[in-house]
Image 1 (cartoon, rainbow, N blue to C red):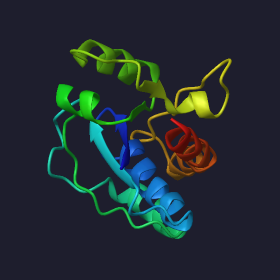
Image 2 (image 1 turned 120 degrees about the vertical axis):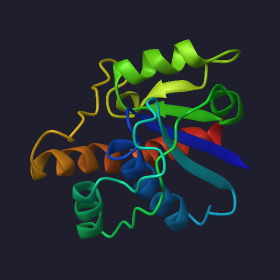
Image 3 (image 1 turned 180 degrees about the vertical axis):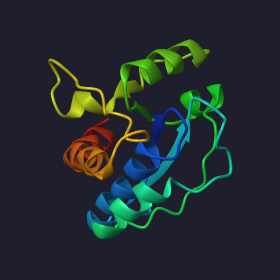
Image 4 (image 1 turned 30 degrees about the horizontal axis):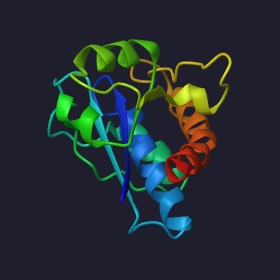
Length: 153
């Protein structure tokens, strides 16, 4: 079984959205039994909470049901997941510091949008509704490429 972990700061906006979108992409590809998808946060402030209600609403409008609960990423996650996808440069750096052994599996989601100049996925938490849609747009474009990479590795 292949596996991918999406990571943002609190695991209540960007990474649970990526998890939800990726689950849909995996299901549509008929690979639900072959791919594990999860999400986590580098910070532990929201552990146990559902995704932010604004992100759940934005995702719902696009047909995604975000059901996961926030958890904090661990060094074991980095060892065990085939791909660990950070939402921005700060999360990428935190993940690399947390990594005990391997770090070659840690990438930014933006790499799947523009390999030469990977953009951060902006945190929509303090912004308006359009920020949540912008994040979902980026995630929807990246997830098919992430799945392709995951299945080829």
